[in-house]
Image 1 (tube, rainbow, N blue to C red):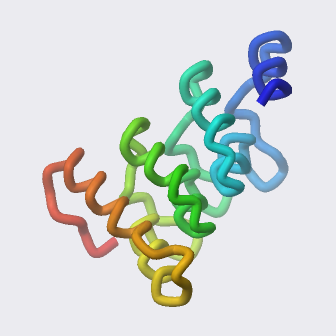
Image 2: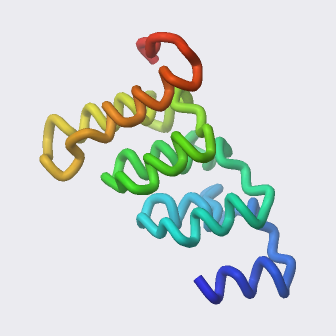
Length: 129
């Protein structure tokens, strides 16, 4: 986290800068479950929470896909991440969480958590996308 803070605060590194695959450090930290780095980037920079990689994956989608409950919870609730953006495979974070739940207990509850956050924020039922 100290390196992230240093690069953002002292070197003015662009938090939305992408690598050759269209991934930002924010998406990497979200996929890997580094909650402190994700929180710092959302609070100290203008990071695009709903930004997509070249193949359409958002930070929320990646966190859902990789079973990072703490990141899913934070992005959906504190950052109001859009739960309806479909990733590369055509699945939203909700559907990806549901798909993963079918295959592993490690992912249990991710899709329910995203649905609850999305419904509360949008005051609607989830769509089929």
